[in-house]
Image (tube, rainbow, N blue to C red; front, top):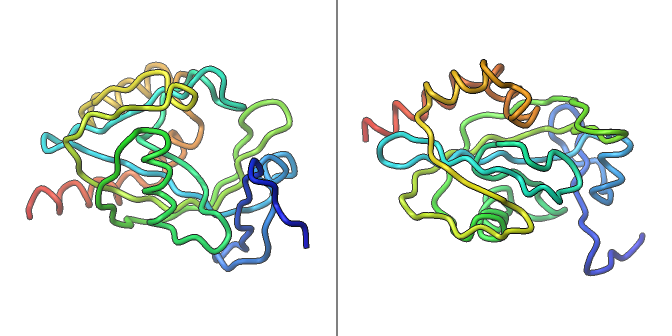
Length: 185
């Protein structure tokens, strides 16, 4: 078994039921379209506005596109919630409590020879903290009301990441249920 160098990012390979099948270096998993575990975080404020980030232009794919609060991959043997909180701290400079709301499996081309082939876990949370993003990861951020987000995506879909569009096309009701239940608490 190869020992990863400190700079190497590893992802957990899974089958279609999200059962671990091995591991791969992150870029290699995207080049070979290997199914791997991922997460997508949606953080709302008390007014119900979603915190969006614009991916830094220098990212190896999807730079300059708007997306949900945070996305990433658990490392092999790293818990899902722990991984999501780690990435929120690394990318956005904060963390908050998160709750699972669903999952989906997709295979989406992102650029050149790279493919997002992921078993993606959706997590929602609420936080009022303004992010302090890492400029290597995030070039801008904003909060947007949920209905306005749907209008913007319909008007200019190519300004948003393919996975955000896929999540909203297939799992929007699960996120909206979380929003409604969270507001009722």
